[in-house]
Image (cartoon, rainbow, N blue to C red):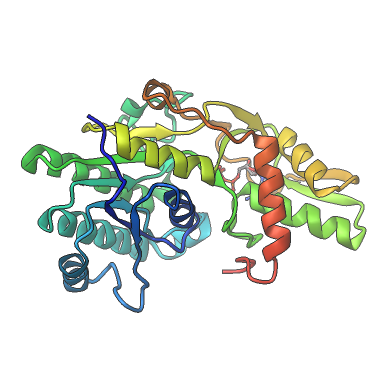
Length: 317
Ligand code: GDP
């Protein structure tokens, strides 16, 4: 009982973000009609506007990749916005999708929904088994509510709404702001700028011993399209590659991709964060999906994208 996207009207909410734009690229080969909406036309926080948009455009399927996102600093500074905007966006889109008879919806969460001290690799059923990481609890609480909303609409109304929880993603369209970005775009930018300026050293935050899992956003989009087709159930599905790497090894790989041959220097005033963050991807693998882009290839692709789009990339937010 697979859901076919061919011939359907498929709404990608959040098409300007890193995941949304990767979904639009991926859906180009699905023989479906992709619908998007700009914020000037319809602000997804506006319930009336969202209902009107669904009534007028009648999508068959929805990828809900729209969210207010940001790092530690942004979460800490704008907790009300993170809670309110994410609850409003997902509440409006999920409910309007149900009211307008959308056949399938996929809600996108994030690995930060899991408890701070979740077992590693993190299985789906670790959800709500312990306290969250306090710095991004605002975002995490909203995302947990979103996946519970999909579960509730399935239970009460029989709606085929599913949720996926991606691991750390990277690739084209990433945020390259050095203060607010995640580690891969930060290292890409620092290595490139150091090489160009002939600076002999590259600064790595922390000890370099923490381990993280990374998935290229094109692989993530492919996994989401796959789940849309083959998965239907109340439980969310982790989306990752199932392998992690130390920050030091990652830094060496980025330096090599960027042609930086100088030394690595550790800035120990910066936090290491959690020692390890790896998703248990047993459930995803059981659906028959495997990543295709190795970390080496993915980093080379992200680096090329950064160099080509430096002028327009998000260098500061
Ligand atoms: P996290 O996965 O939520 O901890 O987010 P990050 O991607 O920001 O950080 C992952 C790890 O990379 C942490 O141990 C950081 O200290 C380390 N790291 C090393 N250099 C950098 C850097 O330049 N920027 C960022 N953001 N992290 C870095």
